[in-house]
Length: 88
Image 1 (tube, helix red, strand yellow):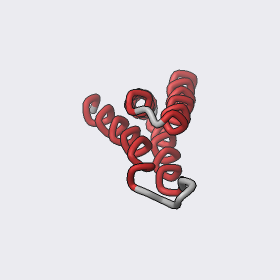
Image 2 (cartoon, helix red, strand yellow):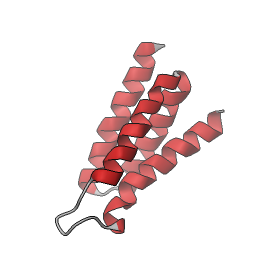
Image 3 (tube, one colour):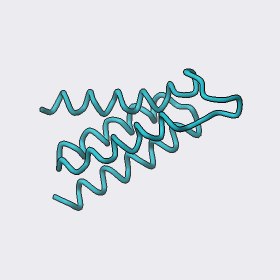
Image 4 (cartoon, rainbow, N blue to C red):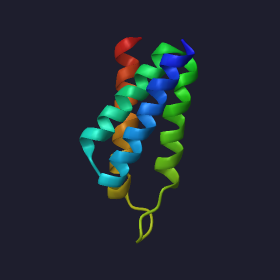
Protein backbone atom coordinates (compact mmCIF):
# COMPACT_ATOMS: atom_id res chain seq x y z
CA UNK A 1 0.00 0.00 0.00
CA UNK A 2 3.02 2.28 0.05
CA UNK A 3 3.02 2.95 -3.68
CA UNK A 4 -0.66 4.00 -3.97
CA UNK A 5 -0.34 6.21 -0.88
CA UNK A 6 2.80 7.89 -2.23
CA UNK A 7 1.20 8.39 -5.64
CA UNK A 8 -1.86 10.02 -4.10
CA UNK A 9 0.22 12.17 -1.73
CA UNK A 10 2.53 13.31 -4.54
CA UNK A 11 -0.45 14.11 -6.74
CA UNK A 12 -2.01 16.07 -3.89
CA UNK A 13 1.12 18.15 -3.49
CA UNK A 14 1.33 18.88 -7.21
CA UNK A 15 -2.30 19.97 -7.30
CA UNK A 16 -1.85 22.00 -4.11
CA UNK A 17 1.07 23.95 -5.60
CA UNK A 18 -0.91 24.49 -8.80
CA UNK A 19 -3.88 25.75 -6.74
CA UNK A 20 -1.68 28.19 -4.82
CA UNK A 21 0.05 29.48 -7.95
CA UNK A 22 -3.19 29.94 -9.88
CA UNK A 23 -5.31 30.76 -6.79
CA UNK A 24 -7.80 28.17 -8.00
CA UNK A 25 -10.47 26.80 -5.70
CA UNK A 26 -11.11 23.80 -7.95
CA UNK A 27 -7.50 22.63 -7.84
CA UNK A 28 -7.43 23.21 -4.08
CA UNK A 29 -10.44 20.97 -3.54
CA UNK A 30 -8.91 18.30 -5.78
CA UNK A 31 -5.63 18.51 -3.83
CA UNK A 32 -7.46 18.15 -0.54
CA UNK A 33 -9.43 15.18 -1.81
CA UNK A 34 -6.27 13.41 -3.00
CA UNK A 35 -4.55 14.08 0.32
CA UNK A 36 -7.53 12.65 2.16
CA UNK A 37 -7.50 9.57 -0.03
CA UNK A 38 -3.76 9.15 0.58
CA UNK A 39 -4.41 9.19 4.31
CA UNK A 40 -7.18 6.65 3.92
CA UNK A 41 -4.98 4.27 1.92
CA UNK A 42 -2.30 4.38 4.61
CA UNK A 43 -2.16 6.57 7.71
CA UNK A 44 1.30 7.85 6.74
CA UNK A 45 -0.50 9.80 3.99
CA UNK A 46 -1.51 12.30 6.67
CA UNK A 47 1.92 13.84 6.11
CA UNK A 48 0.61 15.41 2.88
CA UNK A 49 -2.14 17.15 4.85
CA UNK A 50 0.43 18.36 7.38
CA UNK A 51 2.73 19.72 4.70
CA UNK A 52 -0.14 21.68 3.15
CA UNK A 53 -1.09 23.02 6.57
CA UNK A 54 2.42 24.20 7.40
CA UNK A 55 2.74 25.81 3.98
CA UNK A 56 -0.60 27.57 4.40
CA UNK A 57 0.52 29.04 7.70
CA UNK A 58 3.99 30.09 6.56
CA UNK A 59 3.27 31.33 3.04
CA UNK A 60 3.38 35.10 2.64
CA UNK A 61 2.16 37.35 -0.13
CA UNK A 62 4.07 40.36 -1.44
CA UNK A 63 2.17 42.65 0.90
CA UNK A 64 2.46 40.39 3.94
CA UNK A 65 0.33 37.60 5.28
CA UNK A 66 -3.34 38.01 4.46
CA UNK A 67 -6.47 35.94 4.89
CA UNK A 68 -7.43 36.19 1.24
CA UNK A 69 -4.06 34.79 0.24
CA UNK A 70 -4.57 31.87 2.62
CA UNK A 71 -8.01 31.03 1.29
CA UNK A 72 -6.85 28.59 -1.40
CA UNK A 73 -4.47 26.59 0.84
CA UNK A 74 -7.07 26.39 3.58
CA UNK A 75 -9.64 25.10 1.10
CA UNK A 76 -7.22 22.31 0.24
CA UNK A 77 -7.04 21.38 3.91
CA UNK A 78 -10.80 21.51 4.17
CA UNK A 79 -11.11 19.11 1.25
CA UNK A 80 -8.65 16.75 2.90
CA UNK A 81 -10.57 16.75 6.16
CA UNK A 82 -13.83 16.22 4.30
CA UNK A 83 -12.38 13.26 2.42
CA UNK A 84 -11.07 11.79 5.67
CA UNK A 85 -14.41 12.12 7.40
CA UNK A 86 -16.34 10.75 4.44
CA UNK A 87 -14.28 7.57 4.22
CA UNK A 88 -13.88 6.78 7.92
